[in-house]
Length: 120
Image (tube, rainbow, N blue to C red; front, side, top):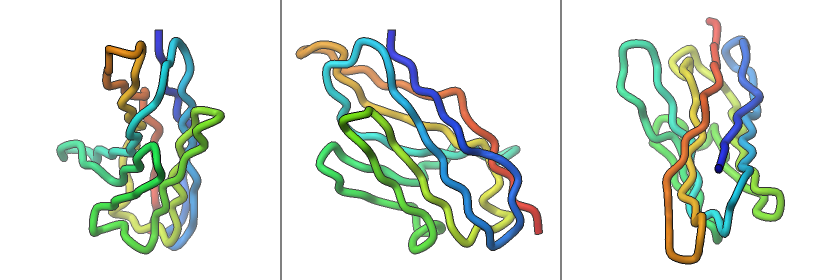
């Protein structure tokens, strides 16, 4: 069984920084794309950033220049460095990964989420 476990959320003042981490474990053949999503109260889940296995990245416009996604393939980790945080960044942040659990089977996995709260 594959698990994604996030850590690093918390309460921070506007303008501050947080670094989220996500560790993948279990029966993993290879990890393809990884991503961070977020969901604020009363809103739909939103894609924040993606990173391919080769390291290519994409960001939603609202976080460009402030957030950086990175990954450590050897240790099956993905990170989200969040700088210049704003109150509107408050949400539960979820790790997502597209994982080959065998050479012929790919599945999508989600972490349990970590709360990020930015106070004004």
